Length: 375
Image (cartoon, rainbow, N blue to C red; front, side, top):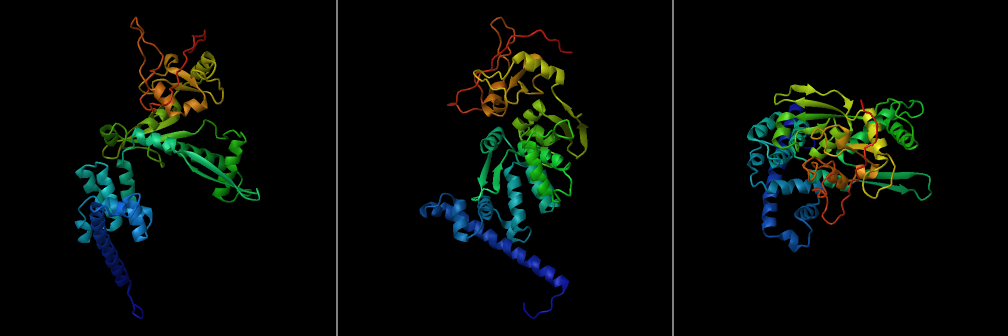
């Protein structure tokens, strides 16, 4: 190529030709990886998985190795051989097919560029309760102090909705910091985190609102495991949606099959302030049996909203630890048990379904009613 005078059209054509060649080579690699898996070569070499084996043998990232393995299991890479799609598009189409997308959705995917196709795939990917529980269990925040003690680094991960709330809170507080003291967004975010930890109140007031979009067709077909997302943020599943509806300030935007809004929910706290104060006074603290914590007490629905009503009989007080514990969520996510005389009991089920069987389950105390009037 050196010494040749290229025209703009020739440069573009050659780039497209080379990318098609990359796709054909990846298609051949995918078929060979399928054969290697059939002969169990990765385990003969002592690799932990097929992805690790491909990553080590081809000297590629685990992400590229994972994509190759995904394509190797579809047993059809003819579209890459025929130069119809690139490697990246083939991977995204395979991910879309793995979500159980309809033929109509698969055909519609051809209209998107790669960025749009990636969003389209994310919209169809199902997020089940097990996925949400795993994301919650893998949450972490790690601090590392420098040797001289002058600086501290930290990193970690949060579940999707928790990360969105933290990001929004820091962004809103950071916007109040003068630009001359913190010229960059990163500096204002760092200052906002310190201010938040020092107890600075939210200057905008009203707390942080979660705006959730719901694709009616996808959500209905998957029981809320697909088609639900925080506006301009992460995907969420049914459990996270129940928690947002139950305790957050929320706007719900419904989207019909043709993309038009079905309706926009009014942004409001689901538990009125006077009712919240009544429940806090009635319970006198966290109602989990044996818990004496009074740290960040919050009022919580026993049967999640909107399945359960927002009235005193369906509300209880939890400390921050038990409010964020999946086992407590499981204990409160139940229908009331009947009394022997047939009347309903507000006591939650003692057999929650989302907690590990070897973990003791929290039991909620049911306090006696106190003479307060709620209007």
